[in-house]
Image (cartoon, rainbow, N blue to C red; front, side):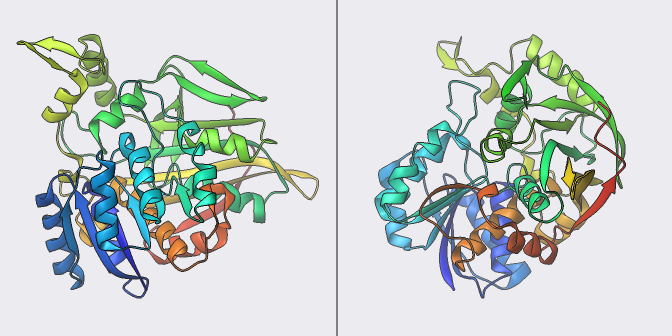
Length: 401
């Protein structure tokens, strides 16, 4: 049994603390902190109503390393779970080092002034965490996170060698709204409008954003348009599985979403550089975020399912084989359990699982770790037990595109 400090009171933070409270044998005490304490208090009330567990809350500016360090020392957790904005990763890692506490997040660091997300900044902390005898676990969400574990589990149990890997992320949910993002609008739009990028034959191949479209028939969702994108787990998978010749990431988008996105881009509302407005500087994408629905508010509106998985082709016992590992999550079932839609649920549950494995010592080490470096078996087992069951099936061959 261990204390944990969770930073971030969005949908993912809400799911994570609800699921932690459902496992009091592992999480003996939970503190939830955010810039807006009222959000933490609302989540705490929901947790109390749904589970009977009381959690503590605190106001915290996670950009302030000294304040974060002080809160960690006051709470004395065994682990800090960072579910705040990716901009804040390095500051929270610094605070964990200062306070001597292990660290976990779900998304890699991204500088505020450049839409560029990569692991180099966090990998640079390797020596500092190792020398401090601490563990930092990066990307314990779904993608990144579960998709990396699916890959590692596939390599451990199903294939002797992986030659090609495709990650397919489908959100078949419908809010009934003309335009809404299913996680933080600012992060979502920065990610979607970035150039596409995939790994092929030992190098990165870059192209225009959302320029490569394919149709895939997703189980329990149906045929959807999916688009080639860059996503952070491609970088860590390419690093830890150098034998894979091609790694790609695909995400589905509806026509209405893309139509609105094109207009917003054309009028400059997705810009991340400051512009002058009535004598002061504003950042257009941050102003847009203020106008869009809060993702955590979409739970009661969202119907449908998500389907996220990996398709790996390689060799098993000398013969070519293709395997598909995936999870289907129902938005309404996720909302009934935690008060949050499935996109938050599919990230918050893996955050809880990664934290549980660190707290129980099933995952341990000194330094900075990505998910694919660790034993996939206990994680895969917990997915089945805690709301994200997965299934495996053989395919006739790799994707035809």
